[in-house]
Amino acid sequence: PMVRELFGLSDLEAALRKRFGLKQAVVVPGDSDVSEEAKRELGRAGSKVLRRVIGPGDVVAVMGGTTMARMASQFSVPSPLRDNWFVPARGGLGESVDYQANTIASELAKRTGARYRMLHVPDHLSEDAYQTIMQEPNVREVVDMIRSARIVVHGIGDASAMARRRKLDAGTVQEILRDGALAEAFGYYFDREGAVVHRMATAGLRLEDIEAAESVIGIAGGRSKGEAIAAVMRFGHDDVLVTDEAAAEEALKHA
Ligand code: G3H
Image (cartoon, rainbow, N blue to C red; front, side, top):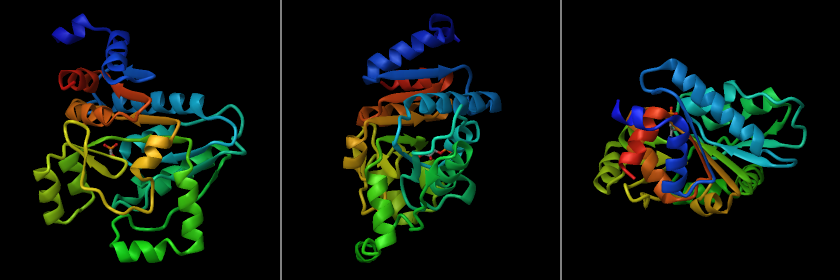
């Protein structure tokens, strides 16, 4: 309550920008953990940011999750995006169909008249399987497109919640938590300093592709995600953070 009195939303936005070196921060009122309305507003704010950033010919790589799904379901454009592409940032991460990156890419394309490609490849592959699958011309073509994305839009999750939701095997979960994983984004796990713990071969975006993307937009809210958001912002490759009041307050405490 103290923080609420001291800081308005625009003060929180300025504090996030400054603390995490962002080009832009957008904070919606409330706490998505407990308010459906806050989560809807978060999705709406995310869709507005993305609409402004997309330029002619851009390829947009999107991650999955419930927040990304809220963003996608509220996305609209005044005129069709005929020369844009939406692609999933990663292969299947073991999410339910509604929240998979493939589903979100196709919904965004359908809502905007843009084109899309699917990546029908599980994300967790052995090195051998990865090498084999990447030799498939269809897969290769989509992967090259994903890795060339100018814009990346992603959610942020709590590491243990995401590891469980994605049904990582118990050994791997133990290992990443032991290594200090606190946050999950882009299919990677991060510790509190924003260092990546647990890397693996992926048919999707690699860390270097995220670093090379011109516009990386993170959308995540809810007080429970504050610490995870701070960790991913420390990784330091996001340009824009769209969040809610509760998560912003919490992220700044961990900044
Ligand atoms: O990477 C993070 C997760 O996709 C976030 O999922 O939006 O359902 O919390 P969520």
